[in-house]
Image (cartoon, helix red, strand yellow):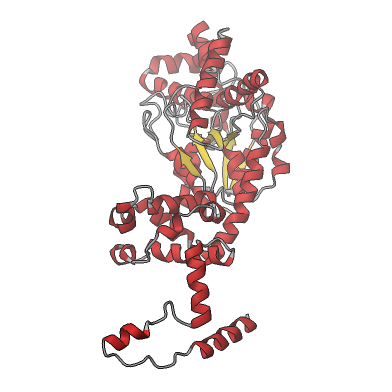
Length: 443
């Protein structure tokens, strides 16, 4: 079991203990042992402290790092601001040996020395780089299947470079990969890399903080997201607490906000009740209800389909251009229907007529490089629709004719005689009806 010291920062223990609870549970589930160290203070926060006294900023950060170094363990933090402070200070001290010497002279009077070689991880970085999405996906018990989640990185998990360089500072992907590993669909949106704006509150600009919150939330909701996931307590405060303030004015339901470890805990099988989700200011109840319904839908889907193959079909989309039906009806896009099946479930697909647009020509199967073919999926969906009485009237009448006469059309004796063809021999309709009745009796 890997041991890690954790720097919780000021905000999580004081204001969001449910984030701490989820993080402790998840780290244990991921095979890490937390070592709680005494002696920490504020990291310190950059906007307030560095602007007031730069040397106090460096000295406070150096002292925290020196305390952590005494444990001789990697230092993990679930706070973007704390992470950026520590990484930036360590980078600065590597470049400025005089500053490092001056700080160590002051620390020495308190029995501390900063070597500057401590390994500092952001929680998301550690999950991405030390574990990896694939490893996490393997232990998911209750995937967030069918849930649409937007990711907010926040500014200081990736910036400033080159002090921080584990993912792109302008077009990152690794946070999304973790969310995808939980089984969710990641939603892209225009303001994805924008600052949350929470720092406006620290300088007395309340209305600007609320305006930035509103802009992000509206943008995410426009993309049909079920929730927003963050990795920073300050961002959580902005989108949960400040959004709640906005909602009091409108009475709307709002956008649920989660810290990443809350979603991981749910996906790893932790119960909602032990996570304290009811302590969120913007209710997560609708999200949880929908997720539980999706899990039930997924169980049904697993009995009928290979979900990994469906995912390949939805992402490939090569058949869209090959499909003859799609060429005469631009509204019929096979991959779109497969994607809807994956995200909304069987019922949503059966509600409309689209599955009956498939001609069963098997073009998709023959041209599929994975040898999957959407026609097989559509055939199964048609069978389910038939069983539920949702088939088109023409299809129902044709099937009834088959059950009655054993054929789909009666010959015209006069036309055959005119062409000099012999009379058709008796067909096997009676025997077939008997055989089908026996089959149904055994089912």
